[in-house]
Amino acid sequence: MPVDVPGLRAASLARARDRPRGPEPASVSDLILPDTPGVRARRYRPTVDEPRPLLVYLHGGMWIVGGLESHDRLCRQIAAATDVEVLAVAYRLAPEHRYPAAVDDALAAVRWVAERTDAPAIGIGGDSAGGCVAALAALAPRDEAEPLLSALIMFCPNTDLTADVAGPEIVAGAHLWAPTAAARRAASPLLAPDLSGLPPTVLLTAEHDDLRPEGDALAARLADAGVPVTHRVEPGTEHGFVMSDGPATDRALADVARVLAPGSGSLPTSRRRPQ
Image (cartoon, rainbow, N blue to C red):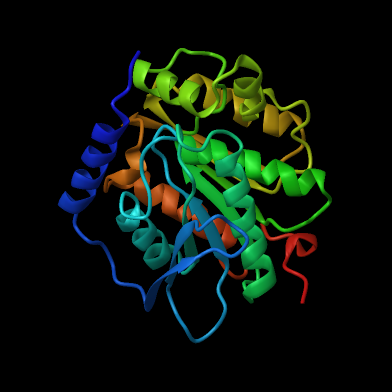
């Protein structure tokens, strides 16, 4: 189906303007990530007094919409509720920038954090399409034997771009991001040949979400591969529930804190940033 990308982007910005601002962290600053083609990021620091674990966060939006503003409130909530620093990344969008541009941008963000901050632990995560990008980005440093990540976090992720069972806009977005069948297969975390060696993972799906079966299937494959997985189907929820307040979002934020907060038993020393 034809997709009105400019219209969808304008609507996303309008929704962002209508949302309450959210908590005020100790510091919020915008930057351009080095080693990228001008990719913007926003850093939310719950405290400036000492290093905190850091979550590189990738917004949802069918790979074609969203950015720093669309998920500003959620990133503020994560920083406030978990005592974890958040680096939101406005990765390049399709159709202007196709797969693997978004994954390259996510990897550049992780490497920037590892080289230039004192974060004791680094996680990567995202919702919907951002969860897909996060999973793909987590596979690369594993394959390159770079133990950079302590956690992978996915909320209602797209995991199989070959299925074409989601809503028509999501399917159209997937085709704009990964135009060929081969690209859509390569961009599908569920279809990765080997998922072993990924960091401890939180994967939450929503009961009333077309993407739930593929998210549940990825959680099962991760567990079969020996990856420590927290997987929960949030009852009574729909796709994108983390963008709204409620008990399901509170539980999601608690999961982030558990896998990344100081003192968590989920932080393998082999995956801490080298000092």
